[in-house]
Image (cartoon, rainbow, N blue to C red; front, side, top):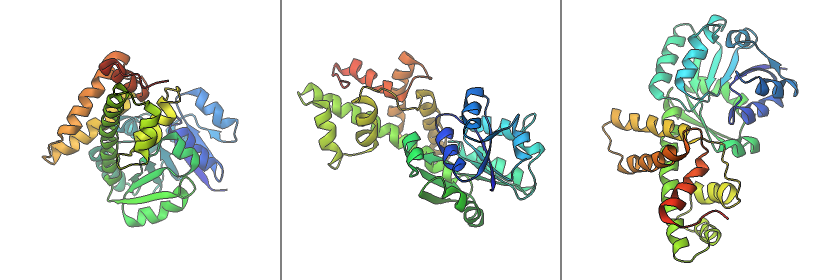
Length: 295
């Protein structure tokens, strides 16, 4: 059985790693001992550090909060660089910063280590179902080498372009998600105030030209159900939208809708904090408009 390493077993990393565990001998590392125990109980092997993990496999997946954490895992004490061998692959599924990704790739390339970006979109639900979108940045040779493993995670693998391209598209996607989310809550609030039931509005819009991720997943699964949990924090959305803003600034592009959506997100963060689930945006709109969206 081939050996695969996975570092970062949080809300997104856990279901992604579980897909790999079905076919590979999985070596795992996470700061949370509960996450490690979960995988130990399923037959994975826990490692004491990133360097310990890299000493056991040449195929290493990362799914971490930020590019800064990725740098620490690679370059820090007991980091991957201490034991990663030549021609190994480090696949970064973090929603990271393209410029940092390119710098890491350049550094590791000088050591003959492959570093590619492969962020995902579709949430834990998409990961569990095996249809989450994976956008890969790297050379075409690197992509073709690693794709067979990714095929065991999802049926939706896309070549995005050179290294960093996956992270660029993911940042743009998440900014667009934020814009659509805010616009959708605004319209649903308006319709509720006009006497339309929220579930009726969502059901009809989802079959119409205004449909988007918020009408397909966010509202029916997380808000109208009363669950109020998406598994994605306001702080992470703030971070991702900030990455997209950096890309816009670097390319001298104005993003007025992007800026406005981030200002609206700030209202939710100011009230609930950066650890709050993104579902809390619905509460912000209820308070702002007086329209009750939740059941």
